[in-house]
Image (cartoon, rainbow, N blue to C red; front, side):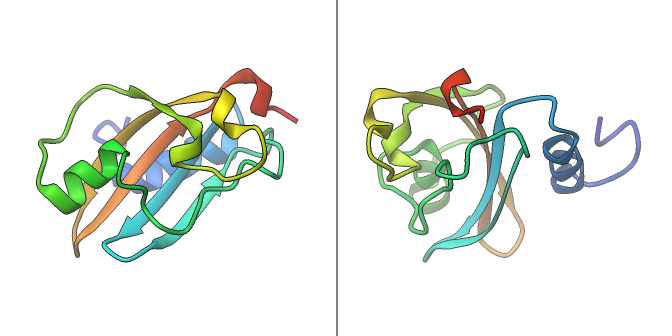
Length: 116
């Protein structure tokens, strides 16, 4: 869609998140911590991403260890991204994209239990 409308991937994902059609969170990190995030309005308020990029995430593999970018989402334990009580019982789908200035943008698709 970004190519079709000649806009950035980041702008496209921000718009998709705001449209509230999918239970998703987008989050941007640099090497030290979270820069910004946006959640779909349907998501319960406790599903807010942690500040530090967890070492077990695919995003950390890419940003900190130079792993190749993947063009598909992968499952990861929710407690790699969130820290509320019980989040360890859930999985999220994670797909990350490298950005300029040593940052990474991650799309997290949340389980239906995240919908408020």
